[in-house]
Each structure stands twice: as C-alpha cells, then as structure tokens.
Length: 179
Image (cartoon, rainbow, N blue to C red):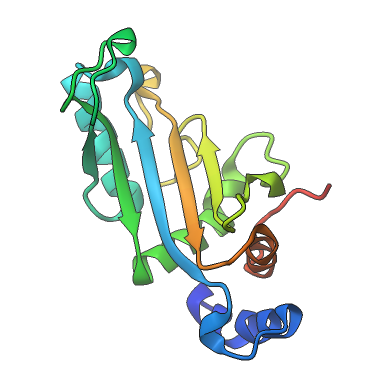
C-alpha cells in the first residue's frame, strides 16, 4: 500500500484517537520535504556545483534552486549574492513518494544505522536528518569519491508540538531509535 493511502486509511484514524482530535484537518500531517546541500569551501568550483545540482535533480525528481548569500561574511570569504547552496522543496505526491523511499530504501542503506534519533524532531514537530554522503541513494552512481557531498533532509509537518510530530513519525513507521 502506498504511504499516502496508508496515512489516510490507517494512520489518520489512529492519530485522531491517540491525540484526542475530532477533525481530520486538525490532525498532524506532512507539509513538505526540503532537501538542502551547502557548498561550503567549494563555492567557486563550478564543476562540483553542477555535479551537486545533477545529484539533487536525480534524487528529488525536480530541479534544485540555487541559494545565494544574503549578506557578505568576510571571515568565510562570502560576498553578497554568491551561490552558497542548493535546495529542493517537495510537496504533494512527490513528497509522499520521497518519504516512502526514504523510509524503505535510503535509511536502511546507511552504514551502521541504528535508527533516527527522536531528538531530531524540533519543538514544531519537524524532523531533520543529515547524511554525511550520498552513498545510500540508490539512483546515484558515485564514481569519483572526491566529489562526495552531504545532504540535509527536513520533513516539515503541521504538528503543533514535538509530541504530536513524534507520534506522526512513529505511525508512519519511521525507524526511530529507542531510548
């Protein structure tokens, strides 16, 4: 069963019961998924930026937006307007498909994976996961190990607090670490 249908048929009634919510729209749900890569020291390396942009396009299924610096920071040699990262925002069916692949394919492929730390859920109920490299993503063939880069995934929810977000992620069968 697809994750979106599973949410509507199984998770939503269970969430309403556990959180004592009467209305379906008041129950927490996924709002968006943001994939983010910062270029770090490689802001001038056009070849690496193009490589990261292609990887994000393959992983997300849509073209990333290049983020520019809003302020100049001389300590980091960053000028205003300089491209410092790339991000993709997924909503709707692409978001549900990505989260399903994240739970079933990507996270189990992470080396020495013991589960997502529940403390990664912030006070607004959003989960942020960081990957040190892009090896777990099956769509990408990494031939040049020097071009490995990290990736941050932020899953935003409509939860009002961390407890509601945690309950949502547990019912979505996220591999959360037991504490």
